[in-house]
Image (cartoon, rainbow, N blue to C red; front, side):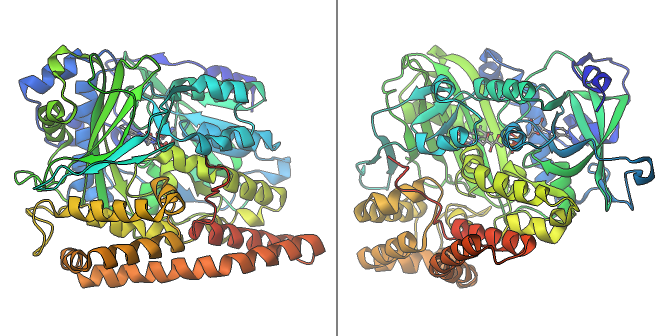
Length: 620
Ligand SMILES: Cc1cc2nc3c(=O)[nH]c(=O)nc-3n(C[C@H](O)[C@H](O)[C@H](O)COP(=O)(O)OP(=O)(O)OC[C@H]3O[C@@H](n4cnc5c(N)ncnc54)[C@H](O)[C@@H]3O)c2cc1C
């Protein structure tokens, strides 16, 4: 890596109005060049978007809606005109006779969660480059999480304790609320402590991690888009294209308010032993790997962060639903709310809905209109009187039937949202990254130690993406909260409050079973014991509801799901055995490096796949 290269990729170029649009621009293009029709916002929504103090929400909403339309369309991401293949397999990329070695051990592509993986690997002594198409910058909207999850940042030496306190900009000490209304009664809320009660500032956090990365000798290639990846038997060659930016230079990760740049003619090629793909849910590498397969579901999220006179702003709403299924939209809306900052003046509110990836589902723009209409009833505020800090929206595709993401090529590992490890019922990708950070870093550290790169082969990397029943069982929960287009009730035997009734029964059963059952679930970890007890408690308390739910979901869906449930129980049973085996193998040194690598990954796969990684000791 020459110093010239880092200089040449150090700063953005101004945008020129005469640029030609290239393939990779199309991947992130504006609606007009996608030929997609996206709805125009009503005057009230336009006025709301105009009041936002950050970013260009109207333009960003158009782009997000165009991407969502494309995802839902029947051709979906099959359409190669919009998604030209990025990865190709070639014989060799290095000239061994000239003594060529790869420029890097690891190139991490995508700098939102990617920066944590990059820094963790750098700390283990590897030569790491971090590539980001925009500025290496986190969004200003907080990530909500819990203190226990943040420990991974200390463990991997990404933050010091003092830095961790600096990035935690909100902490609620009053318990959060879970509440689901039904037709007749206003049910009292279930209260939970230390769940999603901490707000981390991504801009501060990523800034600290980025500085540490550069100071520790990492190579930062920002304003550079990955446009070509050639996988050879000896290394990977990654082509980067310098980006040109206009006014909207800002965070480009999920929920960020920046606008992508455009390709220039300025390209550079770097070589590496391994590519870590952290380019998010819409990663071009992952889209190619999925061969255009449609998601199993999409969670649509809209919201805002506003300052003003909030009637209550000392505790979060973990999950709240006060409406029946919308008859007009065939959608069940859920809500979340979080205090922001320490002065109790700002509050984030999200409205979200699960459903299939179907073109009949309404747009993000229409969802935002519903949000504006319903927010006063939810929070008791007059939106006109509030200061709009920022408007938020996103569509989270979920591939829960085939998660985690399959490894398709040697030397490429997807992580973060691209890795498909996040729960299809929460959109807590940051929390999920923290949960897996040490596991992934340990495994890659082991694999990179083997100098012939045999542990970077596709089948070896697949061991880092083991089938996870703990994750797969949640697919049914996603389905149980989804309304199909045209549907007005939760099945033949449940009314339009049916989804709320089931969720209420589920959450109540867990609350009655105690923290050991409730806490892991609320932090996206499903265990065999917790799930079995909850299902049994639900069946005893309300056997009729279970039958009603069966009619809603369908027997086929339930039978498919029972495979994952049986696997979950199996994994939980095998885990202690594997753990003992692993201990014996380590102390006796009886296995070869490859065998030990496999055993360690199998043990981790079973541990995480059974939810045994949830450390109740570490949790308050
Ligand atoms: C409204 C909203 C609220 C959320 N709230 C929470 C929360 O409270 N808690 C939580 O845990 N999670 C939350 N999430 C989810 C969380 O933000 C995501 O899980 C997380 O951002 C995923 O990070 P990522 O790095 O995997 O992908 P992304 O955030 O999508 O980042 C991908 C990165 O890759 C870069 N990139 C893409 N293509 C290229 C390319 N060709 N070349 C180079 N770079 C490229 C992008 O610029 C971007 O920086 C929220 C998401 C949204 C939308």
